[in-house]
Image (cartoon, rainbow, N blue to C red; front, side, top):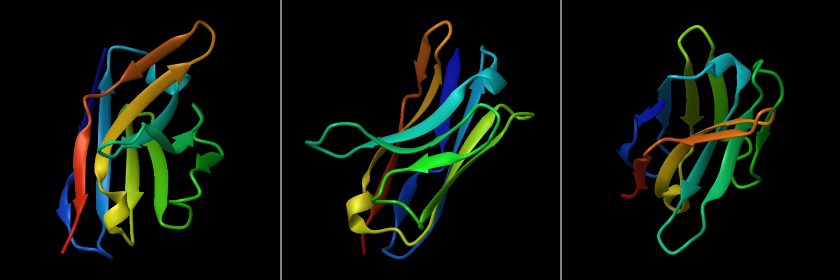
Length: 117
């Protein structure tokens, strides 16, 4: 099983980034996919989640209206479009795949996002 995040980097406040998480080794279309983030000294927090079928998505209040999660089941990839970035969005962003029956939970290695002028 592999989840490989990419697209992180340094961006100025107000800028945009698009994160990608390319996956392999499991049945991607059967898993809910999520993005989490962890800032230094803070706990890992859910950013956004999308169902296996790409239906309704959930967002943390601190990113609503700015971030959009999407998935391409043909490419086994999930995306996070991040707009209007703020310095407080600085964190390592992790991709997560989760299935309930049977329980499976996979994580990527993370990609650093730094928002700074």
